[in-house]
Image (cartoon, rainbow, N blue to C red; front, side, top):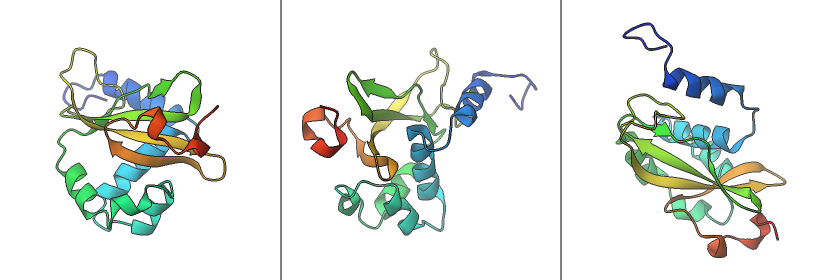
Length: 149
């Protein structure tokens, strides 16, 4: 609830929506990955377990990524996640800066800065995984095993 006024707000709606999602969704993977980056312990094994094998080396020791995400003020995520038609195993999650609260769905009239997008893929063996962060990875640059033909 809005701690200043004791009122229910859009951030509360967003958290209710997020918390009602079943475990194992792309949203949960995204939030867990960022949570691990923000944690001072920086659990590299857990972070690697949330990545595609094709992208794991690009993240290095995760120090740069941790520094980047720790510098974001008012970190939030936009929902719903972006999906491409005919590609249910590929989603993009916009990371938002300066949304004021860690909401999943900030109000439409609130100014948004988007430092980047997570590209997430569904692995039949491992569930939703982070493939990249930055610009949305175009379909033609994705490993074919994650695409629906």
